[in-house]
Image 1 (tube, rainbow, N blue to C red):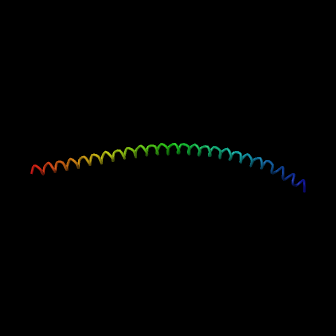
Image 2: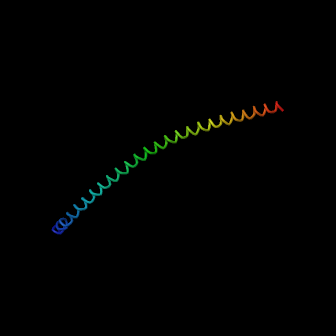
Image 3: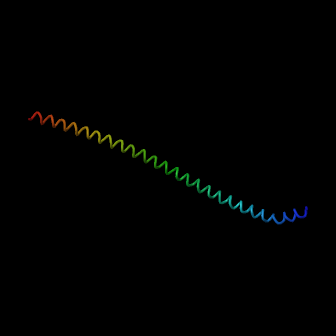
Length: 91
């Protein structure tokens, strides 16, 4: 029985080595894929940061524009009221 195990061992030894090489190859591919994914995540985090910064900038611009619009409307309504009053005095 020992001879059979030994014979079986010799037959499977190259198969085991082949499997080990395959696993090493897959590990290398997995490492490359992991690095690629990590690089993509890093890029996307940077892009998200840029977009957040742009959002803050645009929000500030919008707030400022709304404020200027409200001031202009207030000034226009005040001028309208003044002209109405001026017109009513003339009549």
